[in-house]
Image (spheres, rainbow, N blue to C red):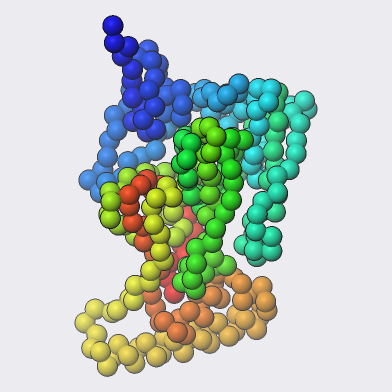
Length: 313
């Protein structure tokens, strides 16, 4: 007799036919995988008190506006997270710190030098202080996930952590001091990665060679197989002659230069590192433009609908 199983439409894991939610990622199993004409699908809305197990531990999702992950750690299991993500813990939960790679680079990027580690047994709870959605991403052995900075809510101890900076001046101009990607890798066994996305989270699987361009503030996560580069599009006024366009370009660069110089005098070194000043200074060289992240498949890409806009110069 064949054992019938239900395939999760989010993480593709197999669950018993009587299950209401995926045992691996918590996604509802009775919801169709609806994809918009544009190719995006909404991340599954995890029901309150949905339970997901990993190792000897489990976590439950609570809260609708600001989601909370309540983790019941078993003996020998642990999770890691940024310090301010912890909401509460039982006093028996042992705490430690994990060094984060990067040194001074992380200081300039406002990234933590160390991450908090909670060891079982006992309960610990994590959340972000903003409305949004929680996404559970199972990571299989050998798989790598790249996540925007500060999007991680927590990760299981079976995942290794590192980071990389998007190279090039354009990446710096797009998002202040630059965009850093947290990289999580499962090596000896599967792991779970919980992310907080601001607003709504949407997911898309790109085919081989398929490309999309995403506003930098909207990017949330991607599989490492997805290649990424930062591109800038010139904003050309419609109906303007080449001579008129050149004249307006010179004028805009002059104004941008004045704004940048004023901001630099007022704010000093900290002003030089600020996104607004870099955006203004970039106008001296490039004029008005739209900076986007170009992603090329194959692989999954996730975006968030609520963000601070960084894309124009």
